[in-house]
Image (cartoon, rainbow, N blue to C red):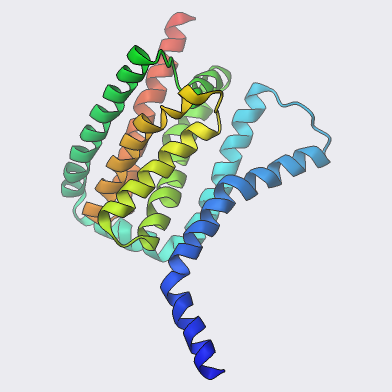
Length: 240
């Protein structure tokens, strides 16, 4: 019996990061959404306005970010010190991968639009619609809260669980791409947009792995999303 418990303990140590990653992923993208949906159902809210959807999404990100900070606070302090000590070197290394990710993202989007007449990804269309409701809250949510949450969920948890560099980059990127598509899935063509999103996911994963600080990928992700969101807001203001 003693040997059995010892074996279980050893197996748990071996797979605890995998189990942790799975649990965090499920909580982040299923349990928390269900909790909000149940709360709204309990309050007998049948339909949400556009602005309220933006506010609730930001609130979910704040709650999730707080929980993730509690889980990873020691690692985040270590990573911040490491990032701050060599900020320019870390960003210089990360930008190289970000540029490659952008090239892959743009190229795959062009191919999808030219060959398959794919139009725009459903997720991207939803973001554009939400920007019309509360642009400045969307800037905070998409430009700052979202990148921090996504990098901790898709990069931090996955890197802890997957020790092989290329396996981590591939799995992290693909799941990152997939989760940006499944939530707004309308047809098979939408699945093609997993490719451009994954290209960016690969880039952020490589930047994190090669600098060994999550704040490299967080910073690049924030810059990327902020540029796109500000561009959308300015375009909206010009059209108005």
